[in-house]
Length: 500
Image (cartoon, rainbow, N blue to C red):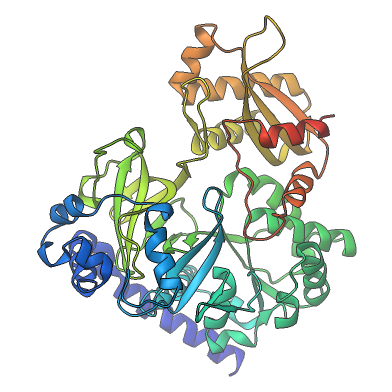
């Protein structure tokens, strides 16, 4: 297919897709209610459906009364039965895949993906690209080379079901018209050692016409730094036609300044919110913040106010009840058989027409050793504001409580920061950061004002401290993320050895 024809067709497809998508943006409330009742009806004869009397569920309220909020441990016995070959347990038949993830409390998790659920993983990504092409009125990137970061596409067959990392599973569902443009090679993607894999990707891509690159920010930074080290050029000089970067997994904002420095030129950024459990949202307007919630993609959403999460009889809200700029624990019911499932993510709505969200943290990733309940969104916004006032670049950071300081000293929040470019005055940076945190979290402010805590302290880390930590934990790789917030000193005790 000629380049001109390929670009023209892409723009036509994009325009048609965006026009058709107006329906789901306008009808989210009705779609969500209809979807839940359809999911319940479909799974009525499964073991889970029989145990929870799905035949009597006629409303959302019925569902919430009969199906409690669950996590992986709650559903594990059902998943174990599915793994042993039993059908019709959580969803009719058997899953098409198990997406294997590394759980912090449950060991490896096996997230079922049904034949009905799998298409939505790729359809959401396709929809994101169509929205971008239509808004930009430019599809030039489709004629160049693209990297879609993924785990090894080599799948294991466990319990008669194909099993692997989600990104490796998705590799088998990339449309044919993108296959010829796709890098790296299948052989390179199979490399398990992450550093060796990135080195090989550098070799395979450095002389190519790269137009789209996809990955989480730490991986992108590692890849870009290796390219620059080998070639002595900024990324836009090396890839002058690079048009688009797709990223997800963590908040992009703390990495933005460093990424812009490595790129050395203008590149559009699209942020996404995918997981093994589903592809929930993507940035449908590359000029504005916020991710468009996918309300017609086989997932019914509920939202628990963060302050109630984990409490008995916590309020379970649907889209019609949510408020803007409030944090909610995200609860899912999916067409792969997850029922009222707490995924562990916290979201914040910034728009209702259509429904757009920010991912503001994790239910288990917060710092509250003294009752302050500091969440990721607060620390990321605080550090962003601090960097603007104290020009600097940050590679990564981690916040942990210091509960037992030297005798006679008040406890404090200890920030471990690896700078790419240090501020001129680190103490002024520290004071600014403390002020920004106090403005964003009233509980933290009260603890400082009441002389319960002393102002935060910063440990300035040597280069590659976070890289070395990830490597020591066997978590060096594209889908692994280091928690930025903790209530213990596990990560802090490792990092403090790298203080300058």
